[in-house]
Length: 436
Image 1 (cartoon, one colour):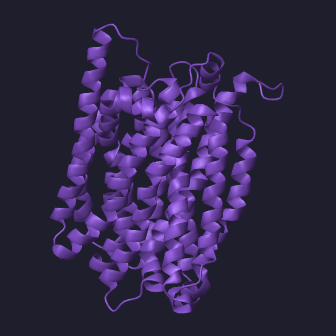
Image 2 (image 1 turned 120 degrees about the horizontal axis):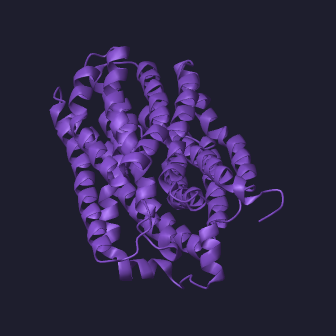
Image 3 (image 1 turned 30 degrees about the vertical axis):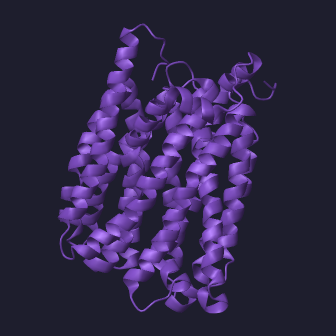
């Protein structure tokens, strides 16, 4: 520990760095999501049918999710072997450079098939970077936390998601008000190019945080393992599977309410792009305020109990959401989407600390990254595609979309119930468990 950075200040520094770093990473990820919904279909996948252009654009969005498990495995290994901090510095660099390069890409009309090929390759780099980022950010905050405060401190990594969304919405709201020709030509590129500034800020902040004390202790005691991911599969494969299920609504819900909802409301409800972006901006602010409050409440009533209640509420939330969204008016749409987002965001805020406490330090980065990123590949990457298909298949009917959302939340609820029962059985058997 350096003299200039005493241990008493490290928990706050680590939480702040986790928040800022994940905010930048998610800003980069979300601006791609918004560009996929608003502009990539027309620029990189032109066709006579907007449905096929949108599906192709969302397919490249999904590619980033399928690359995330690779990032989780690679950087989980590095984080469990050489340290959380080094892994996080690398992922931040990768994400920033890839995002800026997307902003410099020529369109299909300029270079033909090369344009979407380069877009997909850069999207893969983004996916690998964010796949390695999440687990390390959660652990740097949680493992620096004072005793008994893991859930709250780990939630700061989760808080980066709505903060990144607010930044992304602000950026795209500004450029989407431009003349259409200018927006399609160069306006959409500005949010991507702005990532260069954020990258420099993120690197400077993370340089001021020490390595995780729990990892340092494990390294000094020579408790690190040669192949962390192999150890995870050997000893905790069932637990990983349950954690994949537990993360479902926290991941899928974000891309249902933010990414798919942009395409749905503009194509099937008939609202303007500016209106839905304004609605999502208001909802993102609500989400940002709700998440730390949810983490504090979970510390009081218990993380498992809170997660069950949040998942149950999330199962009910899409029905009033769609009723209100159909109005096409700002206030009812904000209220409707906020109802679903509050339930999802409360769950999302707490699940990181809960899951990270289930695994030992020497494989924790690999285990939680694999759990989260595999879930992200399936639930996050496919949700906008599945929503687009259902909306096209059942034109004029919102109930299939609501049922789909309920099923996603139900998977999380069932997984938490099983995880909680498993933890109680282990505690009754006298096994030592980390406090959640």
